[in-house]
Length: 257
Image (cartoon, one colour):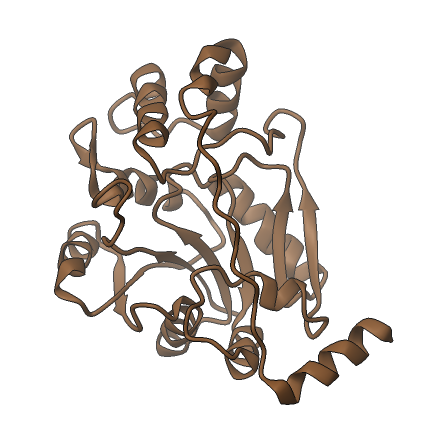
């Protein structure tokens, strides 16, 4: 069973242009993320999954510099892009995260992969980590199936295909109290979000050292004024999933059954 981390990354952001490569302590934000992800033990490979558009060329260049793989696929159909990357590298278990979540925790990646395999899930996620600190784990066979049933090319938000259709087995893994804080926003979508991330690095960063998620949570608990930096940022609602008509009755029967 081959496991890999797939990082969804594009440079099309308008709220915070080129946010994933904005520098923090002299390194692009995504590179700090890769430093963190390399500490995970279960995955064997890290792949940046971006588009073939010229605007995303810097991400391919960074992948080479950081000694990780790069896949360039559909610009808008994220689920298809991830699935094709998994197929190309022969990945059985995908750990999916996005490049605007720089604090995805490697320890909980390993826990979640073990949880996923233990319960033989199609899809697994954590319950209670800060927003922007978690990843999803998905079986490639389930990703292929989700691509078959979806009825849209816009799959920027795709988790609902696994949790809302009744066609997949899925589970949620609880997390320990020292990192449980689902209201804490560590995702980066706006200048305010990026400002908080910068403040956290100012407090915790040491060159050639990755500070753990528990240190971030402890810092924010001890310094509650930090959490006010992006407290007014509203998370955008996910678009409803859309499945092909021939699968809708099957989905309904699953729920009834």
